[in-house]
Image (cartoon, rainbow, N blue to C red; front, side, top):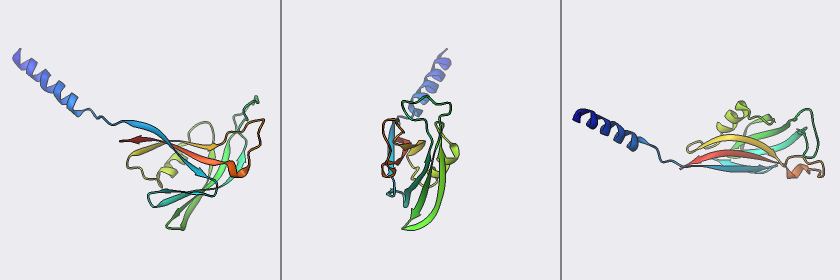
Length: 140
């Protein structure tokens, strides 16, 4: 019986010690139109919103729509590449992977990409008002 109690004590103690006490916080980076955001030597630039066919707030639609935008990457003021991203209501793993490859991933996991503001039937969006919002979990 002593052996069983000792064994259980050792197992439970090791489980308690091995638990990770990291805390995750949801955070966002905003990349404004024609404005760079720095990320570990790389800079992201939202060059242009090409189309925005998302269903505007206040309207009933058959299709949720999508928004497409050109995002460019620079490093040390040198152009690296650009990509036309098509964003819908669902998260696109390919876009997340592409963004992740250029941003510092040491303590964050990118989980959302959104072009804002969202269309509204009562308000016209000026091209300069658009921005790319990158959502991530920050781990301490």
